[in-house]
Length: 148
Image (cartoon, rainbow, N blue to C red; front, side):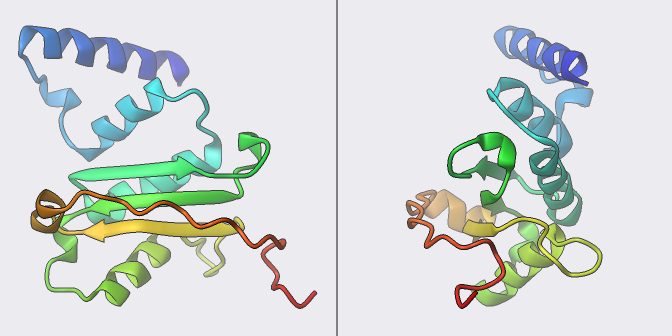
């Protein structure tokens, strides 16, 4: 899998330098693959989140950032930014619910400790303001609640 992504990245760089955009390098899935090829670490959980968001929203822009404390391999904290036409006409709370539903496991659980939705915007909103606020510090815990 890593070799395929590396090849996609090389093809994209070559295509960009020649001013070409081959059909197999267009669309959200290709952008996700190219993004993965350039990151230092992308674990299996992050890949699943990226694929679920791409499938649910066909985003024009998507970022899944592993914000886990300590070892990134723990994959416990993620911040996502999703820009999609699917958000047209939806209020912010509806967009966040849709992102949560897309990322959750089939049983409704999150599968990791923390999901931060940095932005869930339409393309027009993103064009006006692409700023994503910084993440707050995690208050800790193991995801089962602070009272334990």
